Image (tube, rainbow, N blue to C red; front, side, top):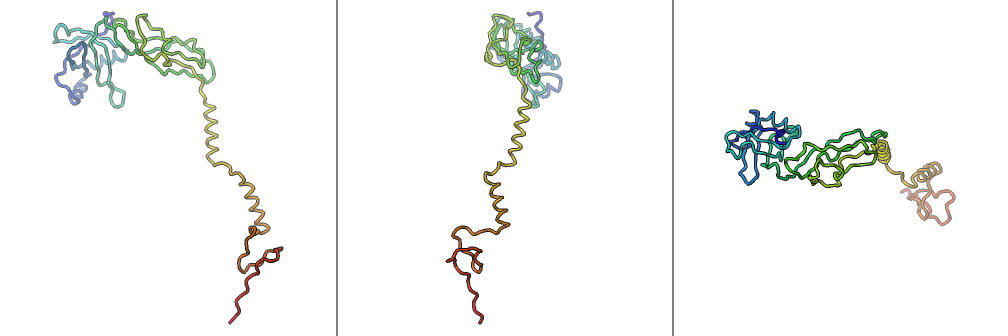
Length: 260
């Protein structure tokens, strides 16, 4: 295990702070901090290009080549704990390391690699979902894997693989992630259903049909042809002749005032 652990060359940072960190990055360095094992934290600079290449390859455990330090600090083992990114999320700007011993048990996250061609993808409209792409485990530093592989060849439509079904490389490893977390799943894409629902919603936006509206319009048209009748019990307007067939007793039309 030790022979394959990559080595990171680091130098101490005399000054810390945002301004000095920016200067270090401009000079091709990656600022970092080393802490743990009841020792004081140490601010360091790493060779940015080499360090980031290791990080992107999934390496987590490193030997530090730290010139100028005491014998107990030289070539010490560290575990990558956290990476900080810029505000765009596409560039590493800082790294945190914890001092460890190869026999020490640690908790860390490892990448989940899906292998194989799922048989469920042969179904029309089927798509592969990968909601959980890394899981947290506990193991010895010496046993820490670069990644965990999951064979999904037999995964069928509407089936899923949860974290507790992932086979860890060693029986000594312990799963920390929620065992019910879905690592891989094949579902059917519901494009037609979504399109139909959108059509219904668009048609409904024109407004609902008013009950009785058709009858009201037909009655209004008929009244316009034959003349509207006054409502029951209503008196004719002053000066207006009673409608044909009006019942006796209806109020007579008002007489015109006599000429002076």
